[in-house]
Image (cartoon, one colour):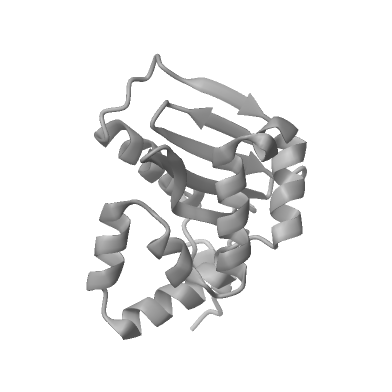
Length: 167
């Protein structure tokens, strides 16, 4: 039996899958592709959507996913309320693990963040300076206030070296 590196079980397409999932969510929401504004770097931190992401990141890292969900859009709140307590705990633990450190989140946004504002929703993404990780978050404009519906989540995009012998 050959030894398999734990990291090799991760799909090389995982980052692509997350980006595709978020993109599909935006498309399914019926958002017009032409009506978008792109905000970059430090300007994101001054935008209400960017502020919402940073605040959610602090809460997630502190293990307070329930607070993020309760402050989100109605469909997210309803889904969270219908989730069994054991699953909520598991999701909160996973969210805390995958949330970037608050200072790293702010620094990465300021350094190279891109907030694509579609009017009533927006997607924030960053890529680390070394290209080995990304941060993604989704927000919606609900009753005049930006609310986080997904993320912020760090995604490891480091290439995985295969350790299994060729077949």
